[in-house]
Image 1 (cartoon, rainbow, N blue to C red):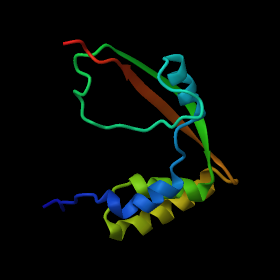
Image 2: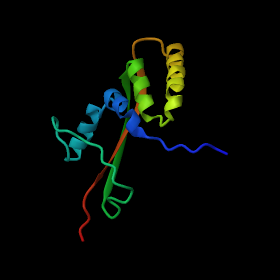
Image 3: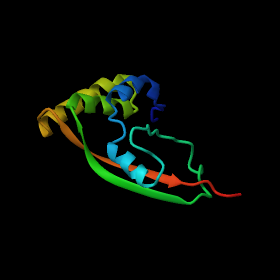
Image 4: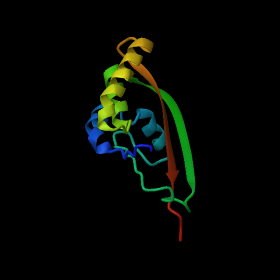
Length: 125
């Protein structure tokens, strides 16, 4: 029988907070173009469910860029989101470290990153 596992991302929150790159400056530029964000202001992620703006006009956009990560920081970022049982995290991290050293030698790994957003307005009732 398959082993049941429920990931506890609270166990990796410290890695996530320390190693997450944050929003790229290009996101604020795109939001500024839509008139909803301004340079020097914070942007935050909101996850409220799939039908938050179900009746509202929406304009999605996305763009791709490379985000530079030192290998140790990338390993921390992946540990934070892997959702592995605690007894498997170290083994996975060691294997990732070997792979990065073999395929991406150097001080920085350029990680492809897709940023996307949806600009929505409130529907009129």
